[in-house]
Structure formats: C-alpha cells, structure tokens
Image (cartoon, rainbow, N blue to C red; front, side, top):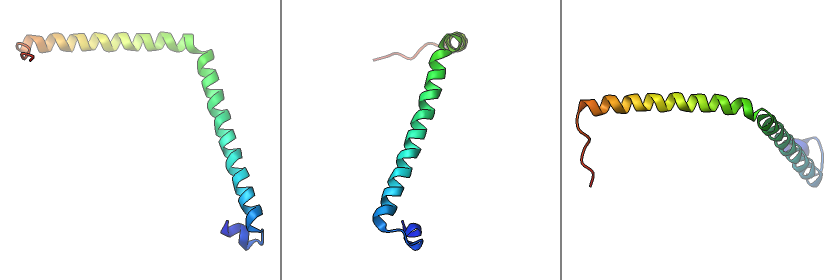
Length: 79
C-alpha cells in the first residue's frame, strides 16, 4: 500500500488493486491444484498398482521384523 501511495495512487484504489491481485493469485493456485488433482484421478489405475506393490513390500518387511523380534524373547505381558 505504501508503495502505491508513493506513486500517488489513492489508498482506496490501491487497496482494491491489492485485493484483486490477491484474488487472482488464489484463483491461479486453485486452478493449479485442480489440474494436478484431475491428472492424478485420470492416472489413478497406474498409481493404484504402484501403491499396492509398495504396501505389500512394507507389510512383508514388517512381518520379517516381527518374526525376528519374536525369536529374541517372549512378548511382554499385556495388562
């Protein structure tokens, strides 16, 4: 606002310009997010297979770790 006032733009017009610029930025960000989300939804079948494979790999590693831990000693008693 101070910069616009130094250029001799009235405060009300400067505020309006600032608000309009902020709205334009928000609309642009919203559009970008919408496009990315749309692309993700369009490619979901490809991502679904990758996510399932990664989840299976993680589950396998967790099972192996649980097996190794159970060999170390008995599980603590739960109350």
